[in-house]
Length: 189
Image (cartoon, rainbow, N blue to C red; front, side, top):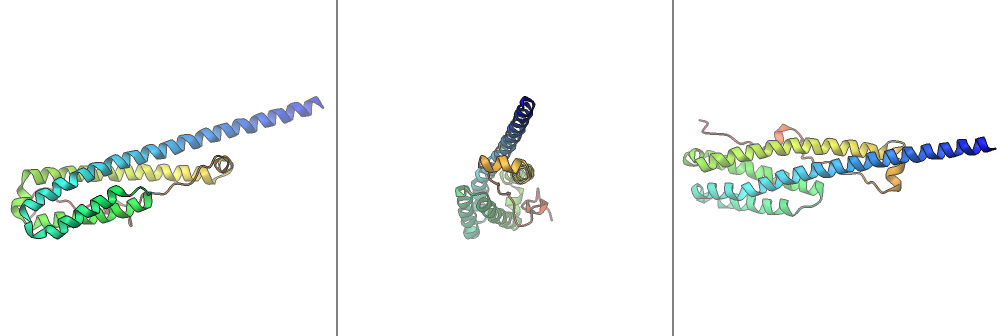
């Protein structure tokens, strides 16, 4: 009788140990997702900070393009207000298209394309877009791993008990290098 009690206690201890290990893995995975989102947020903020400077630089040369510049400014404000990951992704996609329009406008103004301030802003924007792409990939990989842990047995049991919910991916329509706005460095003729 005592050997049965010992076996039951050992089994309960093992189940408890497995539960603690799985819980800790879920916590680490969730924290990795939160940290990865923070990295995306930093890059988005950096891009949002560059946009008014880019608009101002283009505005000095392209007075007739005011509607496009105002639209990009509005898209920036909209993107900054989004908190939901999928809504933020959609807003950022629209903003990327707006940035592409600004760069296209600049192509029509040779003096602007040669302006050092504008070229510097373009370089910063390219760098930010590259960092953002890397941050998105890391975030989406972290979300994939976390979501997998919340779905597979036996960690899904622990996830359900402690309300670990699935996270959304941060994607655009085609989540690849094509999402980086077309930014030309220097004068291409």
